[in-house]
Length: 499
Image 1 (cartoon, rainbow, N blue to C red):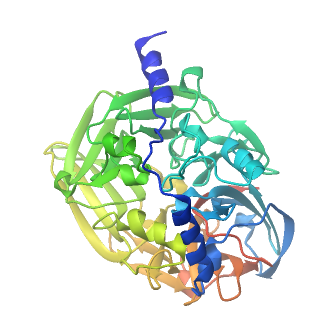
Image 2: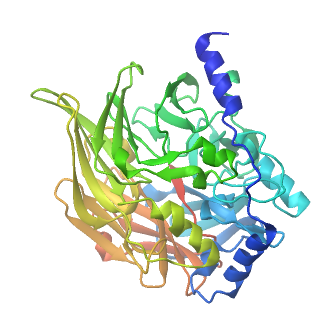
Image 3: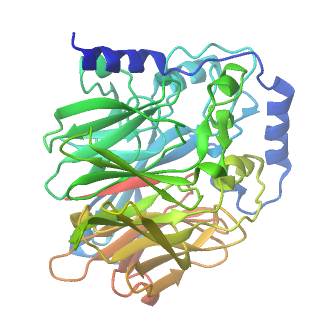
């Protein structure tokens, strides 16, 4: 076994968080459940636990979905938030439920199915939580034996070579059948990578090449992956990173991988003392926002630039150009001034509370690799769940699709918008005060500027609605909508696959 293989195996085996003795007691968890149950928040049904799988069901359609949108919209998110009278302390801890919306003109069908992770199967059988989550620690439970013993497979979905991968952050991808959503087991890219972290935001270039990363917080390594369009791993390696942050997304250009490293930094000692994975991170604003740029051809060639302190979940896209004195990388992301979104906002919804913190703002960045200077401009538009035309990944782009117009605080986005990241011009459609907007995706159309499709949680009707817009006329409203006869828990990310 070579040095690289030995290193990766070490990371895969040692990245498991330790369960120490400082965990919360049972009464605290019962209190969270009682607070949620007692709340009269009209939107709290978005965070209730789905009782079980949802069979393929016809959906009432108004209008007609365009021919270019014929296909399947896959979505996933946390759906199992409580078990045995105990409620998770963070939205991101819920058991993942995958969904597929099968779209064919005036007909739409929906199916939802829990991902049968080892964690969920064992806990449902036991009738109680057996291991901790990202932001929740249960007292007197089993020690965490590996990252996959915490794996909830609840963040994103990646269609790849006949598989549908349900993605988490700290462990393996989970294979699903794209036609039935049946769980097929864990994905192992290479024997020495079994159980290694594979992040939830891979980037797929127009030629089908897939790039991804994984964070091993305990050991301080960043794993990099390059995967061919056929789903076969081309290469993987690990890089040491000082002050390892909470890292959720990245971007690619034609020549580089770009990571924005917020100063929410992992503290091994906090973890050893019993803190959850989330609470093992410390806000260190003095570090600023580091921009790590890695050469795609030679991962040993790296450069770090510094931006003002901030936090982010998601980037839109990045591209590079050759300027007079070298390469300049341009990118856009949703920037927050601090990490309250993950530390408090997405935690308090588990008690049906909203704190009303301001949402992140769409921000554009220039990284001059020759001078080492990094600059950024806030476009003044609150935005999250950034998506682009996937044919432009790593290339120059103008339009970003995103959720907009917070309605009383996270996670209550009430509108979908399209913004030109060069001019700042933006158009939007508001779903109304009763709406909780989820991620929308761009669907190309060779005959037109394309379409935008996505879901919204209508908490007044307690129903989920799938909508389709003309990409160049969002403000005109949806050209078609499919209203489910029920609501599905608020979700995170997904992908569209044309028929």
